[in-house]
Image 1 (cartoon, rainbow over the protein chains, first blue to last red):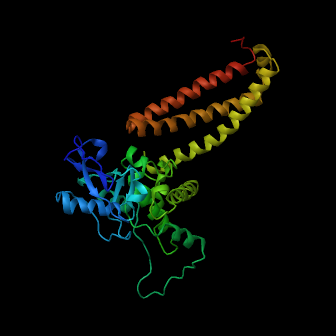
Image 2 (tube, chains in turn blue, brown; image 1 turned 120 degrees about the vertical axis):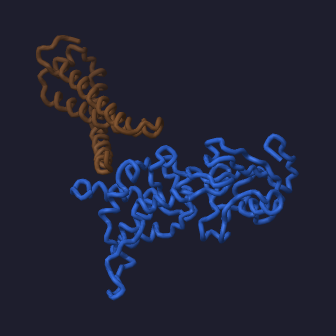
Image 3 (cartoon, chains in turn cyan, red; image 1 turned 90 degrees about the horizontal axis):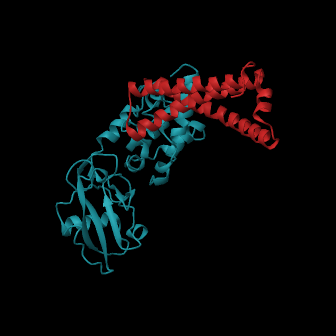
Amino acid sequence: MDQATPPANTGSTIRVSVWRSSGAGGVASGEGRFEVFEVPRQPSQTVLDVVTHIQRHLDPTLTYRFACRVGVCGSCAMVVNGEARWTCRTHVDKVSADGTLEIAPLRNLPVIRDLATDMSVFFDKWARAKGQFSGSRSRTDDFAVVSPQSEERQQVDLGIECIGCGVCYSSCDVVEWKPDYLGPAAMNRAWTLINDTRDEARRERLAAVAGDAGCHACHTHMTCTERCPKHLPLTAAIAGLKRMTTRALLKGEL
Amino acid sequence: MNARTQAWLWFLQRASAAMLGFFVLVHLATMIYAVRSGLSAGEILARTRGNIPWMLFYAVFVASVAVHVPIGLRNILAETFAWRGRSLEVAMLGVGVFFLLFGLRAVWAVYAPGAGLP
């Protein structure tokens, strides 16, 4: 059943347009088409339930990714009615007042097939932003003491809950305009490490997130902050990196 | 261009924006005052000719524009038309020099004591 001959919507079903890929380019590239399915409406139904129904009952060739189904793993993010969301935590009621849904793969990432994207670029950028903790203590040293009330630790707390779902990356216009741009999640990770008083690679990390591919390219659109399912202040983290890199620049440390 | 230079460009654009905010406000207030007071071009020139504070004000104004515009334009061109690399840097340097030279020429025209009416 294709988009040209959609089935009639009876009211007890949802009419779902699902991206079926023919290449890696995603919706913007036109490498694929939306295929329409009619899915039975259920109480407390999530968008992931809808996709699963299609794959199990209507078309077993539909490809998508999920794991935990409860908003912990960050695997099932897709673009639902134009906005990137966790499909497992998105109730159909909240996004489909008119009984229709459009489900597409995340933007700004290559499509493996249909709704599953290749997240390699996304996580490679975490590595480029020096997203790995770099400590100097060994197992024979005593524990580092970090006060939960310290300003640095409180900054870490604000951003540490990121689970790497890619919703912010998919929602970011700058990523679309500048493919090298690190994106909000990678820089949020760098921000949490820069505020980690145990970390030893602050200077290298500031250098890694500076410039046109880093924090200085952010236009403060705040779409990442708006769309983050965990409500992390990603734009504020990037603004913090701008302040810190500027201080380092003026001191000749960048 | 390395990330350090790019960070400098970002800083210079923010700093020049802050300066332009001040310059534009003073410029607009002065223009409105001059027009509402009914000053002619000749009367305005009589006040600006040989006036070093006004000359310095507009010279720094022009310099701020020459810094601010090419950096912003560089971002717009890179993001909208994917124009990047050496050719973009050279073109934007040209834009900056253009604004600086023609801006300073205009400043000189209203400052130079011996210049006639435009």
